[in-house]
Amino acid sequence: MADLPREIRGVMVPVTGSRVLLPNATVAEVISYTLPERIANAPAWLLGRLAWRGWRLPLFSFPMLTGALAEESRSNARVAVLKALGGNAGMPFIALLAQGFPRLTTITPELLLPTADETPHAFGVHSEVLVRDDRAVIPDLDAIEGLIAQALAA
Image 1 (cartoon, rainbow, N blue to C red):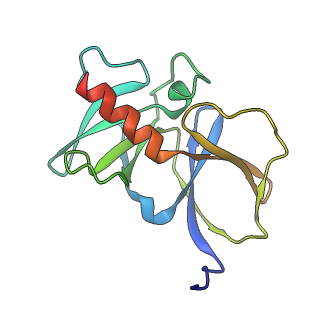
Image 2 (spheres, rainbow, N blue to C red):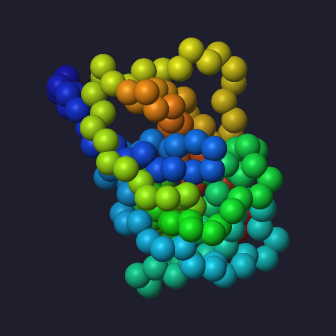
């Protein structure tokens, strides 16, 4: 069995009320927020589509998707363009609404601690962790991508 890396580079993406922790390799780019193209009959958390490098990316709000918010501010927002992991050739990237600039961080086993919270996680949340003294959410990107694909197909 191959040795696991001792440390990985991560990105803490600020979202309203929380931080989302992602592997650095998942984040393709951080761009300025622009008004997205509306998607007919989309759920409220699917904010629309953004043009990026020839693609029309589905933009979603993580706090709205998880039910933590009903509406999210878009003033001073940024967009984290994420590499989709599901292998859908028509959707190689998705876009996450961020509230500020993501921050690079180094993650080691000693710095990444599960929270003691035993309550069930909301849909789209894989786990909640502490990174140093910062609480963060690790999203379930597979489930989120699947939900976005379903919403776009409807």
